[in-house]
Amino acid sequence: MMNYRVLLASPVKQQEEILSEFLDSLTRLDKSQVELNFIFIDDHNDHSLLSRFALGQTNVRILPADTKSEYLCDESTHYWREELIWKVARYKDRFIKIALDEGYDYLFLVDSDLSLDPKTLTHLLSLGKKIVSEVFWTKWKPELIPLPQVWMEDQYTLYKSGREPLSEVEITQRTQEFLQMLSRPGTYKVGGLGACTLISQQALSRGVSFSEIYNLGLTGEDRHFCVRAVALGLELYADTHYPPFHIYRESELVKLQEYKGNLACAKPQVPVEAFGCTNSTDSTCTTRATGEKPINSDLPPEQSLYNRFQLHTLQTVNPSKITFSMLVHNESGRHLERVLKQAAEYIDHAVILDDASKDNTIELCQEILQGIPLTLHSNKEPLFHNEILLRKQLWEIAVSTHSEWIIILDADEMFEDDGPKQIRELLNHSSAVDYISFRLFDLWTENHYRDDLLWQAHKWYRPFIVRNIPDFQAKWQETPQHCGRFPKNITDLRGGTSPLRIKHLGWVRPQDRLAKYYRYKQLDPNGTYGNLEQYLSILDPSPNLVLWEK
Image (cartoon, rainbow, N blue to C red):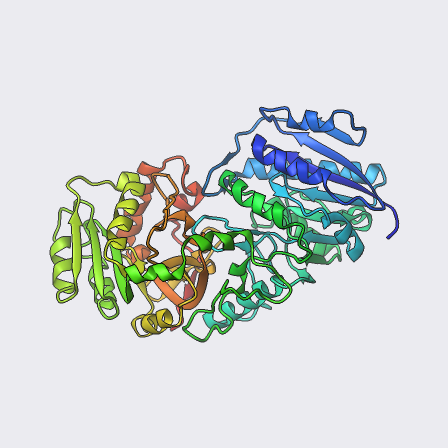
């Protein structure tokens, strides 16, 4: 490989402990036949790490930021506002100009919450691609499975549609084929990328930019960069040989130490959650992390967490038994009856936590679940303004039933029509997984679900069924709203996915949509725990609806 001049650049607004790991990984990069220089924009950080990193080095530049903006992130996710997105876009375009003006062969844009494998840069250079990103995997929310920061189409579509109408089965199959492809070491053509991207001088000189394309509705500067690049005749590639570790949450610093300890291994680490179901038409879920390592890969650091919970402890639970758990509050006249009637077809025990209902919700539960063991608890005062208390309370009651499996659905959620027939078979074939994830569809009518940039729950897999593991030490997302129905560390266990779909009926009735809008407006007026733009979109008079295919 010839000598390349590379400018590694990053806008930095970062917690000190996370930034320290990022900078440490930069010092460890293999620089064989590379003249590497660094440039950072210090976006009003409250520490001096960047200055200390630059001490005594002639190849480090630190530029001041412009306006100061508040950037929020927590143990759930990162909250991006439009002004922040385009501020970062201006910074990245500034890096592009500097790289062009100073004649660099490559610009390497790296987010400041990544810890890089030492071989990342030299490997990406060896590929000879004009634009290429190294793939990493992230749980964008604690309850979700890890997914890549690269995609195939549009905002974050993980399959190639070819603009043809696809059934849900075809969408599932193509999505999982894409994820399986990225789970294998290789370099693949994709439609979108970012966060760890090497851009050649040829691409820079063609006019690539992160600035907004004014007639494009996609969110995020990386989308506008990718669309413009392809329009300029460039191709986008994703490489999977040396995935970085994404320190998306401060709590993941512990797992980072395991990642760093494994860097001595020559083989890349691929998240087992990426493998999903290999047969999307089958109701059984494909095992991940069964003890057998996928070809050419090692199990990720998360796998070691399972060692605390060996399967022999299942002797203290009732094998194959299913506990169905649910929070309820004034559900009469809504969806409770049809939800419970379906559940009664496949469960062994029901747990109902009533949040101080004033109607006949309790009587309805008792009537519909007659003949099924029922644990029913009613709070004297409502607690839904602090949802985390209810979720913890429900979880503790559910695990105390000693069933092997716990299903948690809300009173407006149910499996698709043939769900009861499939659930038992699904669990009978799930001896080597500890949670099963499904996609949830926000139905806006009985026969249509909503699908737009703000309503994409049906494109993500999240846990709805979890194995009851004795002595499991639950850790929760401690927020009063949107805290998750399960402990956040459930996804540290072994997971599987199922193509069986879940209907969310809570948006079907206009009066329910209005009530939810006002509830979110009251409980989370600034969108601190959720998405303010999504709250406002609840009242959209003409949402994009897609036919539910049976």
